[in-house]
Length: 508
Ligand code: AMP
Image (cartoon, rainbow, N blue to C red):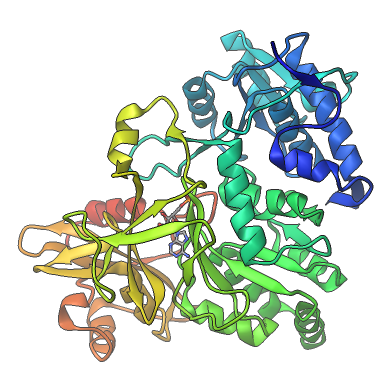
């Protein structure tokens, strides 16, 4: 017998938000929506999805909507109907969309007018329901099922740098734990007002920004997409208290600030003092970016480390010293250990692979039991990232298989070499990879983007770098690029860079 309820939801995030009533939950395109609006809209969506059934029983509902109020209403509607939410990435190709839809065996697709030309034909060919967002938001609400906390809630796809993306399944309990640890660590409150400029197919935007805000009775203001001037405009507006982004966003905000006339720069810098916290994560934050941002905004960015599979795991402190180049210590309820190749914990100061345990760790890789078995050791999730603890704080050395280079018997962190190369006066951006080499195992290969008017060749780079890096860490191959290849989250796609070196022959 399914227990049913008209209003109160048992999904913890929604139950929590239902207490916030008439407060402003979401702002998009100058429109304001309260928590009551969100409750009503999500019950309409849920009823439309149920179409007379009592409970979606974890059927997958994939949706593609521009960030805004309807996006949240649809996500919550799927949850309230008992479905599993599959947020699709904007700007994906048709074949990528088809992969996500087929892999999850989605029963229904929900889209806005912009996404309809792409998704409606995909739904029609497969004989699955394709619903417009306007249609589901207009439905008359009916009774909704109660949803147990342990049920599957969401599938997010990993970046899939080496194989096809894997679907990461989290339960409502996992998502609740991912939210709660950030609420506590970063002291979210109802007075907060956060600006979202990240895509909504990734844990960073969905959990750290939107879900934490709505748990706290705070306001989440959503931009449809990242635009540096639009972000500055909203910061200048003076109501934003929190900002969270990936390092490339900060790089673009710095460029926009640099391009502004002096009076405008002063206004923007002054406006930053109204914010209480600015966070960076999802990729390594170059120390040079942290320092430049501090000059502009007065904020020492709080860097944290996390992953789709685990939510956030390590964070610099809200209060207390934030160590540049480090990601701090474990968040509340998250257990972290570093292990060597033998699976045993390493001594402080020795690099090891990060393993994570706790209630925020995901439930399963969708339909991939083998990947699931490989991903855990004795109940600990093996992140595939290497880190070292120095002076009590964690420093990320990079992806074990990609960023930890083995050259001439030495292990080298690509991230460390990148930090040094960024100090070169001609280098704007860089990415270091290991390329296979019969003599060295791997050679240190650097792809760089030059500053305007900069020039660089391998001998001069090596001559400059040997003051700062041991000989075995010096790049022995160099590629000068117009831009580094990046994914939708702004992360550098290192396999693409490796392929460029392999395609370029050994002269570079
Ligand atoms: P994703 O699942 O797309 O969020 O990617 C997670 C990966 O991003 C991690 O496994 C790390 O390799 C990387 N990452 C996240 N945060 C940081 C950070 N602060 N510093 C360095 N790498 C990071």
